[in-house]
Amino acid sequence: MSLRFHWSLSQVGDKFRRANATTDMKGLFPLETQIEFCRAAEESGIESLLMAFGFTRPDPMALSAALGMHSDRIKFMIACRPGVMSPTIFVQQINTVSALTNGRVYINIVTGHSLHELRFYGDSLEHDLRYERTDEFLSICRAFWARNGDVNFQGKYYDIQNGRLNTPFVSKEQSSPEIFLGGNSELAEQLAVRHANCLWRFADTPANLSSIVPRITAQGTEVGLLVSILARPTRETAVRDAYAMVQSLTEKQSQVFGKQFAQKTDSVAYRSTLELAERCESSWLTPWLWTGAIPYLGAPAIALVGGPEEIVSALMEYKQIGISQFLFMGWPDLDEMTYFGREILPLVREKEQAVELVQQVRG
Image (cartoon, rainbow, N blue to C red):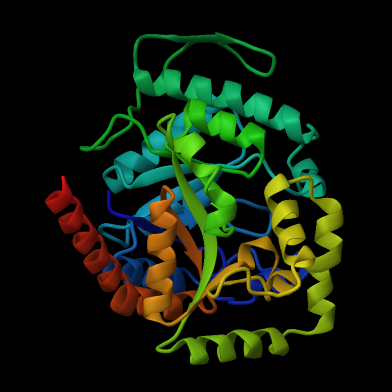
């Protein structure tokens, strides 16, 4: 299986978005900037773009539909929080976007990580209960996509009676969207195995992941990594630029995620990644996995840093333990993505072909 690559649209137009307080984050970016990014992603071999959800962002469903009208191949991984809407209207919206984009839609289920923001949307459930509700939500969604007659479901959080939708999911490839689900907790793993095609985890060392990934993939669910990337022609240049980037951020900005956010979140993924960065003596967990930007930009800033050969080696090492997908962010995203597509992705495909040939000879 070839590695699959995705990119986040969440900070296009503002490369240090996460260094700002949420009160200062813009909710909209010029549509032309995002259209340009979509087209560049298509040219760079990126499969889909993550359309993030939150009060500091535009609505991901509406934006995906708009960008789909200005692109040809890129897919849109639309984030959803089950506590915000009914599963019926969610399936109806996803199916509509699929019809508008010829099936170019995935979904990314997130249970939320910021308690105060969840309450903006009227959601006051605790961490474990949010996963319980998501289980019901996805069960109903899958029933609608199965199209085996009216949908009836009575649970703790939803009561659907004789549910029907006359707008089907439109795709030449499949009858329902691929489902991605994010989280590092045991509840996230269990939910992903029941409902998702792929579980997203924040990056960690291959050694730390080697016992986790196989128990998930053995049950038929893929595992992918959310990780930033800073690639340059040489490792020396990449490391220099990584440290220069951190130096450009102020101490005030570092407090946003380094202390304040850690106190507010109940997300196992965010907390465990922040703790990983804090308890290690070095900011280098491996020669290519760097935590130096996490205090300034949060858990998603754990990064692969190096030249093309180092980055490819890292990706192939992850693949060996069962990682099959990557969701990247960069600083800035457009430059990192185009460099990845031009200099790194071709090397990945060459390595994969070489490994496949060896396996065929041995097999």
